[in-house]
Image (tube, rainbow, N blue to C red; front, side):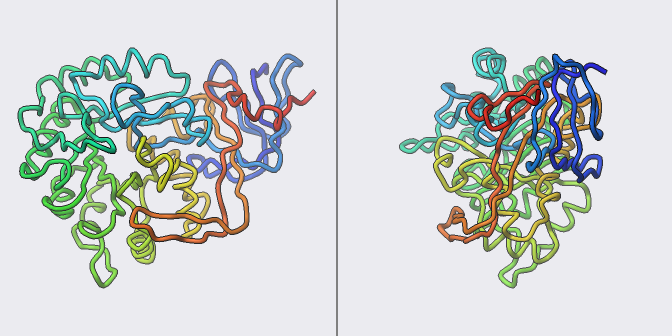
Length: 388
């Protein structure tokens, strides 16, 4: 068979197929074409020697803010993709129904890396979050736009994967969880999952997850006190266990203020692993403490999660959460995305949102990207020269 690109001899880790072995991955017509040993093709194919590296499905970051130029939070999605090996950025509510079409036309459609989005219930999305201005959009009930949200979500189902709402003292203030109720109503109307942000109480962690449905996502799930998911004795709260049992997904959403090693250690010690690992990258945390997706993944690797579980939480499990099963897999016919990683050994300093440092012995690094079946990493192309 004729292939456009073959990644030759890497350690392929694809949790969607339970693959973890040295083999080849081939791409044709923008899709994954085959996974197998010593794949043959014609001389015109782009063949890259990736022996000694790890090949995974294209990484999915379930929580990002990439409405560059449209909100104060937005970072450049393509630059982030190259640096962090993320082939699909899920923007979580940067835009609402009032400005989503600008996001679509000026950012999403111009980006080479894939962008999907949760649509914010607030008319203008997250419009007032910067170093100097902090306005909780969910505190203003006049900005809640359920009818507009339904119309925009229905008209843009190719890109919109769910509805987003932010509640907590910083984001909804005296309105408490009222925006959550509106967002749930919209999500039900359009038949999409909801992603809920939680910060300081009120409302409480328990109140928010108690209202989430199977398939909905709680982001910032491993946040520090107050509104942590564990008790002072280090036990997972019963409401958290009940929510997982009925099918609520727990996402990391590291960000500027939403991930603590103390919480994570307690959750992992109780066998409660995150469903998805995401960075919540934006302008206020891209230089720390979150940095990027692979740094967030590295933190969990250093806290004891198996590499395959870390990769699953950044590929197939994220695809399940957004109901896009063509992503997060190297099955033939899947989207032609792959990430080339390496795991370095040594001493690496990691920091969480409350200033605690962890010295880890490993670090995951992005070394290359395949996007829609084509090699897409010009800065490091020489490392993976074509095989003649």
